[in-house]
Length: 478
Ligand SMILES: [Zn+2]
Image 1 (tube, rainbow, N blue to C red):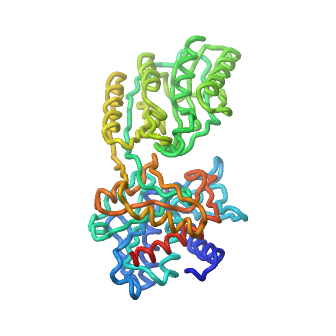
Image 2 (image 1 turned 30 degrees about the horizontal axis):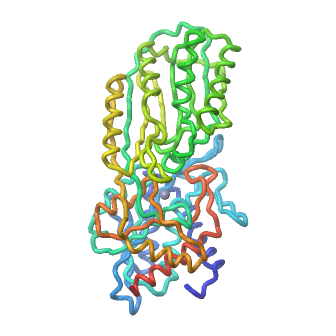
Image 3 (image 1 turned 90 degrees about the horizontal axis):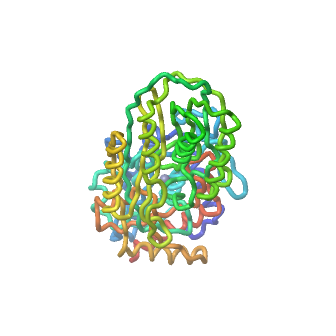
């Protein structure tokens, strides 16, 4: 690929990406993209199989003179976080992603772009077509990374045990090479609600909006507020001005996203002016405690189909929200070591639910968090449901990161940062399947992923494609 210009590489990779963007692929709905990739590589003449969860595994034989090179796995995930701007009609299981390109960025029309991880797939498709020198390769495309990593978890270890290197193409900064990630665990807390008739006249929706939010693995260290927790605290504080009956609390979009908006329904006898002044003060204290300059409480008249949550139950909800740890718990160097996030709150007539996601690079600390959360749930009479654990990974003695950083320097003149990260990636599962695998994670620069503002920095496509291509040649010659 030495003779191909950066621009030709960019256009070639984007041609592949366009094919993927046409195929709806939110997590849990990967049938179409899985079938597409299986056929795509089969038509190129490669052995291409789908496993029982729809992961796709492609074997690409070595080129001439590279027969003795060790087997290298390239891996990306097929699903995407498919979200649209508020008010934009978008059916993630049916509608294609419409692309908008300017000089600097590729983005989507009012939806997420799916560069996470469609760019990983597109680069692999491009490499399969264009790279003329490489050892034996295996491409692995997984399902459901964004929603629990079941693809990586269920991948048969036999696809990894015969390999020496694995390049995961799912990172978001082109000048960073990831050599470790934190583990995490999903937890749910459920409270059975007893309700009583509403006795106060003013039924109101109070919305807290304008917080920074962001991915809980990447932005938890930014000293932002959690809209769900801050809103519940604000409502509890209103009790010093009058009677408040809690009816519902809803907010957040996903467990691994710091909620930027939350809504509560209350009934109260506090007059409008007092309420507005009290909430303004709550907004100000968010500004004092966190780096939140745009937090805003919006009060509207409302109706309720339900009664009020009984006082004692509401108190337990307030106490739970006050005591559950949200945010960074401990740092390791300049990245969070342990953190936790309440990502979603939802209320129906009989139940209030919180979704929780603690992360830690230390397994024992994660255990400690589970134990703390269980105790708190018991004391405040929530049911705690412990879900799936995603494994952490730390590649202390690998050679691959150094090899790739050298090549990157040669291509771009820049130093590649070799770092561990706080967010979870699938490499933890790959490491468990084959502890001897030398694993790294890299990728193009994808900004504001998991949001309708997601965008791909075009200038990073050719360097990353070249980096992978030259690494494969180099590995073949080591
Ligand atoms: Zn991803």
